[in-house]
Length: 294
Ligand code: IPE
Ligand code: IPE
Ligand code: MG
Ligand code: MG
Ligand code: MG
Image (cartoon, rainbow, N blue to C red; front, top):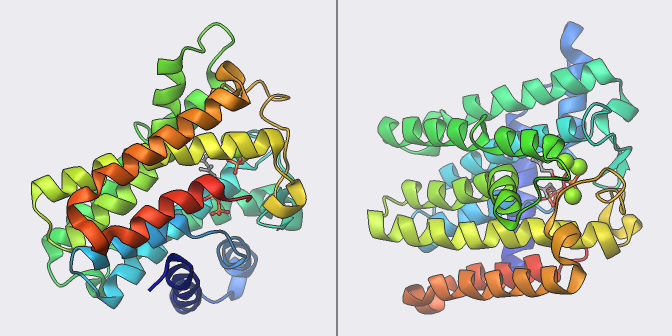
């Protein structure tokens, strides 16, 4: 299977799974549930569930349970976008090619829809269908809480909002990006390894791959902010500079940031050497992430 076939097929299967797993709008909660569905069913590249499902498959867990785990992770990631777009955060009007949740609904609904997606993620991750061994499911829930919490994604969002002009070292920005974006990407690959019952050495390889890829992913996001086409990206461009964000583009400039992302991509691919042909799709994922235009 090629990367493109795998990506298209995962996106389709994930859409159907999310549709089946999300609550139906009804009663007093109807508008919040509608907003949750609007946010999560409305597109996105589905990179995190793809990494989770593909890692699990490569390491021997080719089971529908991985798709439910991927759906849980996509709910969590989508919550982070809904809140990232709020007026008190990045204040954005467009996401995934349409109005952000607080624009299409209102701010209260966006906060609660984000909360709803966040908590739904843990309910889904704990489901029996994810993996027959409850110890594996508990480990996934715990890992996801850590990856998304105040020492993970949220911690990175805090830094993103507060890092000042005087504290823009490469080390600070690397830490910031490893937390705000790297943590969930790392979770995706480690979760795939956990589902497959991989040994510690294999899990460490997947973690290292994900760390390189996660950093490359956010640098590419920052490059796209600086030079991408908002129409194609489905979200605003040229915002990071205006908001004073600390990124590799802001401290290194576009060319050096591009070089850094490419180097990280090469490292990520090299990590997978021992898997040979089996890792072709995960290697192609690196190229996809570095060459994407949205
Ligand atoms: C955007 O993530 C937020 C970042 C962490 C850079 P994605 O680029 O994966 O967004 P979607 O899911 O494809 O919309
Ligand atoms: C967001 O980073 C990272 C999250 C944890 C949501 P950005 O603020 O750069 O993401 P975009 O550019 O709005 O998608
Ligand atoms: Mg942000
Ligand atoms: Mg943003
Ligand atoms: Mg961005």
